[in-house]
Length: 256
Image (cartoon, rainbow, N blue to C red; front, side):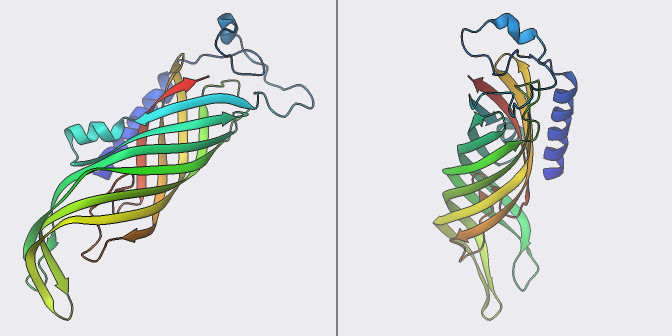
């Protein structure tokens, strides 16, 4: 599954970076509201005046984005998804505190397990209704004095937290001392998961306030509760419990 997601993400990112038109802005600051729009087409000087550290003002507004890849894969391929919206604030076009909020859902049937002691294939179902998650973090633009103010090349660190309940059916419970028993069903099993993400993000303007982009990141769980019957198959906002790499393809809207 992740090979497919990786291929889709890279294909979209390649198309984006090779064909996207750019709008340029004039002056030291990103144009706002009623400023002269004709100036947006003029090129900014490559070299800043002596003694000037930043090309852009202290606060340059907000951008909001949604991950459009997970919902698409959920519609056509996966049986789980996280629906996420993210807000980033722009300081000097260099520092970007961010926060993400969303809901995750899963209804997955797996036949990868084995009944303990017999080697017989088992199919169990993991069903989790819409459950919330949140992320906070910080991103750094490595090209903060670029003359293309609406494009971003970021590295970031995020912390995530999610809560969800799941119904698990046709589960075989295995123990080295007592053997196994089942199948059993567990309803409303509660999970709380914390994790961190480290990665990179690209944002490229398409037209006016609209941009597209993608992020690739590595993730690792910090804590996870509710695992007395085994780890959950899916964690809202994190993805499959055993995964360590994440991808998203984002639609951005810039608020100035």
